[in-house]
Image (spheres, rainbow, N blue to C red):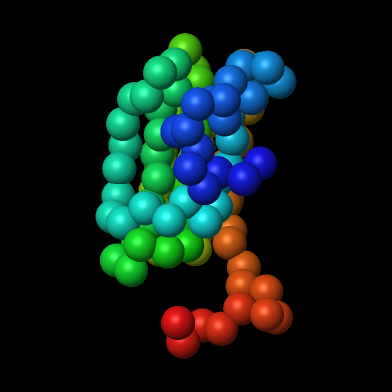
Length: 105
């Protein structure tokens, strides 16, 4: 799902439409780190210092008690740990550059 301009009308409705509990997002193009609530979701995002790239997770507010840990390693890598009924999950969100990407920009 394209998250650029994600807070625009209609894009958040897609989370509800498909009943998505958690979404790993990339290329959020947001400067800095934020953990905030927006509508019915918790946004755990990191966009780096240059306002490009960025990874994170959007989680339903009702599942916030399942979050054990959340870490931002850098603008290309974030991690979340979730407690489920019979196990604990570690989910990595990795944004790898493509061959067309110019890293110098």
